[in-house]
Image 1 (cartoon, helix red, strand yellow):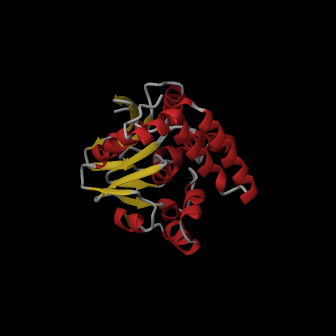
Image 2 (cartoon, rainbow, N blue to C red; image 1 turned 90 degrees about the horizontal axis):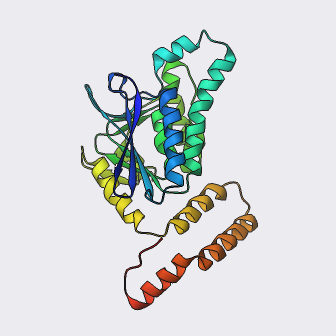
Image 3 (cartoon, one colour; image 1 turned 135 degrees about the vertical axis):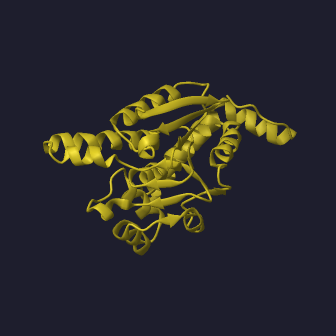
Length: 263
């Protein structure tokens, strides 16, 4: 079966499913391109307020994403360096599009999230992981180094010693340990990660989209900003959101003990 990124809708949530069952949902250029296109469509659509990324069922069991296709990598070793760079940059364009996407993105992880699959999950705003989920930065196991922003994400989430352990040792880490470390947001029963992610997305979908977009941008910019720069950015976002119609709806609903319906 060809590798593809399947797109479906569940209410106001777009579900993107990595489907490459013969290779445990390994990634490839067609998936990167489809992911970017799907987010571009979702960004301008009022019918989409959140996105979930998950993996399809495979003959060998559940898998979020096995990372890059090793056969394709082996073939790429014979290609000019420009071809090799373009392949990585295609993945990185998708990662950047997830980070810049102004709506919440949830990774629903069952089974293995390996290599670029782990990086992909880390690029999302939230991670819901089933009890059977395992995460591994497997690059050093085959004499490679990380891509997909995995080193960037982990270095901002964990102490240096833990990051070097994950990257250099290439050991599997279960969802429970990553949950204790704050990398995984929520644990689910095996087989329930997508269901629980959808329920969480439904809750997010009821919140003001402009406020969520501001929260995401503020978090994205915080690490690079000085405190004065971040305070200025917070001021600008706060004033813009205060002037938005949704703030009037939210404040009025709070005062009258009703439920706001945000635009």
